[in-house]
Amino acid sequence: MAEDGGSHDRAAGHLPRPVGLGVDLLFLAGDCALEAVLARAEHPLGEMKRQLRAARVQFFVFRTKHELRDLGYEDFVEALGLPFLGACR
Image (cartoon, rainbow, N blue to C red; front, top):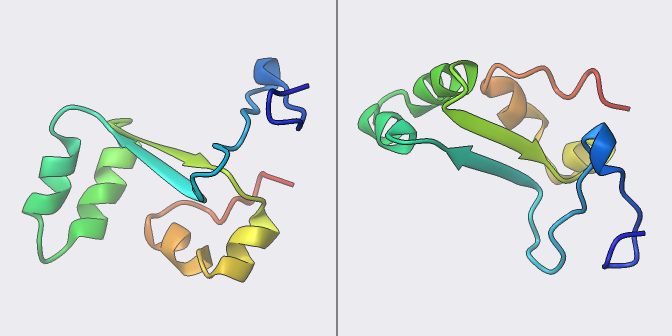
Protein backbone atom coordinates (compact mmCIF):
# COMPACT_ATOMS: atom_id res chain seq x y z
CA MET A 1 0.00 0.00 0.00
CA ALA A 2 1.37 3.40 -0.93
CA GLU A 3 1.65 6.25 1.54
CA ASP A 4 -1.12 8.10 -0.32
CA GLY A 5 -3.52 5.18 0.22
CA GLY A 6 -3.18 3.79 -3.31
CA SER A 7 -1.34 0.66 -4.24
CA HIS A 8 1.61 0.34 -6.57
CA ASP A 9 4.18 -2.22 -7.57
CA ARG A 10 7.65 -0.68 -7.88
CA ALA A 11 9.14 -3.98 -9.01
CA ALA A 12 6.84 -3.95 -12.05
CA GLY A 13 7.77 -0.34 -12.84
CA HIS A 14 4.58 1.18 -11.48
CA LEU A 15 5.16 4.28 -9.40
CA PRO A 16 2.64 6.30 -7.42
CA ARG A 17 1.27 9.41 -9.10
CA PRO A 18 2.70 12.60 -7.58
CA VAL A 19 -0.06 13.60 -5.18
CA GLY A 20 -1.27 17.19 -5.36
CA LEU A 21 0.97 18.18 -8.27
CA GLY A 22 -1.56 17.77 -11.06
CA VAL A 23 1.02 15.98 -13.23
CA ASP A 24 -0.22 14.07 -16.27
CA LEU A 25 3.03 13.73 -18.24
CA LEU A 26 6.56 14.35 -17.04
CA PHE A 27 9.67 14.95 -19.12
CA LEU A 28 13.08 14.76 -17.45
CA ALA A 29 15.82 16.28 -19.57
CA GLY A 30 19.48 15.34 -19.28
CA ASP A 31 22.43 17.68 -19.67
CA CYS A 32 21.99 20.04 -22.61
CA ALA A 33 18.85 18.26 -23.89
CA LEU A 34 16.50 21.14 -23.10
CA GLU A 35 18.91 23.64 -24.60
CA ALA A 36 19.04 21.57 -27.80
CA VAL A 37 15.23 21.54 -28.02
CA LEU A 38 14.94 25.27 -27.38
CA ALA A 39 17.69 26.03 -29.91
CA ARG A 40 15.47 24.57 -32.64
CA ALA A 41 12.85 27.35 -32.41
CA GLU A 42 11.35 26.50 -35.81
CA HIS A 43 11.06 22.74 -35.15
CA PRO A 44 11.32 22.00 -31.43
CA LEU A 45 9.23 18.80 -31.60
CA GLY A 46 11.65 17.28 -34.10
CA GLU A 47 14.53 17.89 -31.71
CA MET A 48 12.46 16.62 -28.77
CA LYS A 49 11.90 13.37 -30.72
CA ARG A 50 15.65 13.05 -31.29
CA GLN A 51 16.36 13.67 -27.61
CA LEU A 52 13.76 11.06 -26.58
CA ARG A 53 15.23 8.47 -28.97
CA ALA A 54 18.73 9.21 -27.65
CA ALA A 55 17.47 8.78 -24.06
CA ARG A 56 18.58 12.30 -23.15
CA VAL A 57 14.93 13.04 -22.31
CA GLN A 58 12.89 10.56 -20.28
CA PHE A 59 9.09 10.44 -20.59
CA PHE A 60 6.82 9.37 -17.72
CA VAL A 61 3.04 8.97 -17.85
CA PHE A 62 0.87 9.38 -14.76
CA ARG A 63 -2.57 8.89 -16.33
CA THR A 64 -4.28 6.03 -18.10
CA LYS A 65 -4.53 5.97 -21.88
CA HIS A 66 -8.23 6.85 -21.64
CA GLU A 67 -7.60 9.76 -19.27
CA LEU A 68 -4.90 11.14 -21.58
CA ARG A 69 -7.22 10.87 -24.57
CA ASP A 70 -9.98 12.69 -22.67
CA LEU A 71 -7.50 15.41 -21.68
CA GLY A 72 -6.43 15.90 -25.30
CA TYR A 73 -2.89 14.51 -25.15
CA GLU A 74 -3.25 11.93 -27.95
CA ASP A 75 -2.07 14.18 -30.80
CA PHE A 76 0.78 15.64 -28.72
CA VAL A 77 2.13 12.21 -27.76
CA GLU A 78 1.90 11.01 -31.37
CA ALA A 79 3.59 14.23 -32.61
CA LEU A 80 6.58 13.25 -30.48
CA GLY A 81 6.82 10.05 -32.45
CA LEU A 82 5.61 7.91 -29.60
CA PRO A 83 2.83 5.42 -30.21
CA PHE A 84 -0.14 6.57 -28.20
CA LEU A 85 0.56 4.17 -25.38
CA GLY A 86 -0.36 1.22 -27.56
CA ALA A 87 1.31 -1.30 -25.26
CA CYS A 88 -0.35 0.05 -22.12
CA ARG A 89 -3.70 -1.25 -21.03
